[in-house]
Every structure is written in C-alpha cells, then in structure tokens.
Length: 413
Ligand SMILES: Cc1cc2nc3c(=O)[nH]c(=O)nc-3n(C[C@H](O)[C@H](O)[C@H](O)COP(=O)(O)OP(=O)(O)OC[C@H]3O[C@@H](n4cnc5c(N)ncnc54)[C@H](O)[C@@H]3O)c2cc1C
Image (tube, rainbow, N blue to C red; front, side, top):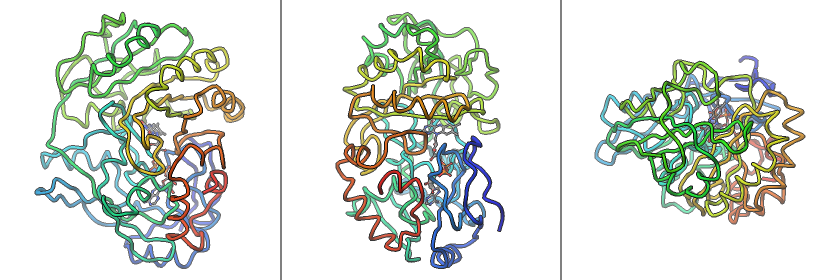
C-alpha cells in the first residue's frame, strides 16, 4: 500500500486514501468488493482527476501475465497494465503491428482506450477501435468479457474507467510495416484550409502544429507515410532542413526519426520516443473533436481567438481520425478532427479560458475525456446520442457506484 501521488503533469494530487498493486485478477475482485469507492489508475497521463477516487486506487503495474498472440486471427490479448511502448516491440518481434498509436508510447493501453485516445490519420480510428474484446471485473466483483459484436461492446471500450477494472484487452493487429516521417515548414493556414482534404490525404497520419503566435502560419506539418512522402508545395510547405520538435527551438532528441527515413511502425507513428520524456513536460492539455465537416469552421474559430490563446499556449496540434460506433468515443458516429492545445502549466489561466474556446466552437464539439475541459452535465450528454445507454450500462455494471468519482459527477454519468 502506498501514497497515490500525482498525475503525470503534476496538476492533480490524487485524493485516494491508498494505492494498491494487486498481482492477480482474483485479488482485484477482492479489492473491488471490499471498497466502497475504487478506481484504476493507468500510467497517470490524464490531465484531470478522471482516475481519482476518495477510496482505493488500483494500479495494475504489478499484474502478472504476458501478451498472447493468436496468429491465425491476428489478435493479441494484453494484460490490463501493459503500455503501448512495451507491447509494440513485442509485436514487432513477432512480425505484427498496430494500425496506429498516440503521440507518445508511454501510456497504458487500458487507460488510453478508456478516454478515447487517438493518433492521427483520416482512415484510422481512435485506439479504442483496435479493441476486439474487453475483460474486466465489474463493480460487483464479477468477471465480465465483452467481444466486438456483443450488445454491450459499443459501451464497454471508451468506459471512462466507470465500468470496472479492465484486466485484459484483445487488440487487432496487422503485419508489421515500415513508414517514413517528414516534417514540413512554411505552409499558410489559408492554403491548408482551402486544401484540407488534399493535405490529409498526403500521408497515413498527418499532424498540423502551430503556436498561433503568427495566426497565418502553420509552423509544422508532420506526415507519416507507408508510401512516398507527399509534395506539399501546393500549400507552400517544404521539408525541414533538420529534425524538429513540435515546439519551435526545443531539442528534437526526444522525437522519433524524421527527414524521410523509413523504419519500423512503432518508431515513426508516435511523435515521441519511449526512452525520453514525451512532449516538453511542465504542461496542461485540452483537446476538442469536431465532425470533419465542421473542421474549417472550428479552426477558424480558434484562429480568431489567437490573442487570448497564444499567451497560454505552448503548441496546438490538429489531427484527423475516422469515425466509430463506440458510444462515448468523441469520434462516435462521425469522422472527426481534433484540435489539441498543449498549454503552459497555468491551471488558473487555462481554466478561465476554456469556456471562451468552448463557446466559440461549433455545437457539435466533444472534448477529449483525458484532458481539461469545462463542459459538464447536460451540455455533454446532448452531444452523445447513446448517453442514456451508457448511463444504463454503468448502472448495470456498477450498481453500487463504487467507480463513481468527482469527474463522473461533473460529467453526469
Ligand atoms: C504528454 C502527453 C501526450 C498525450 N498525447 C495524446 C495523444 O497523442 N492522443 C490522445 O488522444 N491523448 C493523448 N494524451 C492523453 C492520454 O492519452 C490520455 O489521458 C490517456 O487516457 C492516458 O492513459 P493512462 O494510462 O495514463 O490513463 P490514466 O490517466 O491513468 O487514466 C485514464 C482513465 O482510464 C481509467 N483506467 C486506466 N486503467 C484502467 C483499467 N485497467 N481499467 C479500468 N479503467 C482504467 C482511469 O480510471 C481513468 O478514468 C497525452 C497525454 C500526455 C501526458
């Protein structure tokens, strides 16, 4: 038993009474039934109190087990505490890969899919769409296994951690692949917005980075390609003359290889290397997803707010993702564009600004569950057609509300 500590960014000191590290699934069931209030913490990368509880916080870091690959089905079963950065080389050694990853490999798989974490790529769904089955201990201490195709599956993956302890997930894999990564500079927003679809089609994964210090300039376009790197001169962009960090002027050593060199998927798909601290640290994050059809309006709305955004901002990233059918996924029912903000570590300043940004964005906007946002209650529920189904599933899986916490109270879930 130990102190629950803080989240990765250090802006949330967890209030849990205790942190426990079970080593078996049986032990987990006992912990859940003995606790009036319980939650799992993954790798602590969320920026809110979403993983917190007033009672027992469970870490699965010591949960035993190795992944198991079903080569015939191309499906890997992964114990609940594993991180993408550990699974990726394990898969590579066996000739398999995941279709996409987030910007960092350090996050736990169960924690990432619980919040709808995503990478970029207009034909690639969020990481939750790679999930084929979820095994968990529910709020009654009972084991539950839900597979793609089961009636409860669409509500069980992006769970916000509210449905129980995920003890294992099964993920789709594909044959290992290589890709290149090229960073471009010099593009202008007017050109990029006019040719938004063309730019996105330039690679398997495309990220637009800007600090909004110059509201006309897209500082960098990161393109990850299985085929040849695109010519982006139509939007005024040219390949950078050296490796880049998304933040101008920062040492690019923590970033994955660039300048068009090809390499294994897991060494190019994330922006950051496993061996380094991702991003620049000392930060907060917010992200809003909008339907692809609202992307240009949403980016224009943010662009109009640059005088108030830029002073608090480290960098903004725009990514695309394919829609899915998962009830609480921010990309549920629509291809989506995510507008992400890496803020300076100024909790008061960021908290004060978020309602202004949210009011300016299209009403279709949905916030990333693992980052900071102001929307709550009915304003959130109205954006999810399956909200009532999600509430009903939560009531069945956790009738005594052991997994309820302050974040769920704000969300009204
Ligand atoms: C530097 C940085 C970069 C990031 N980049 C991206 C990005 O590229 N794309 C993106 O979409 N997001 C990104 N994020 C956000 C991050 O992916 C999410 O916050 C994600 O949920 C973090 O996973 P975690 O394992 O740290 O989960 P935690 O933050 O520990 O927990 C998140 C939720 O999952 C639940 N949970 C965790 N494990 C389990 C389990 N085994 N069973 C049941 N519930 C569980 C928790 O209770 C909580 O509700 C980034 C965050 C950081 C700090």
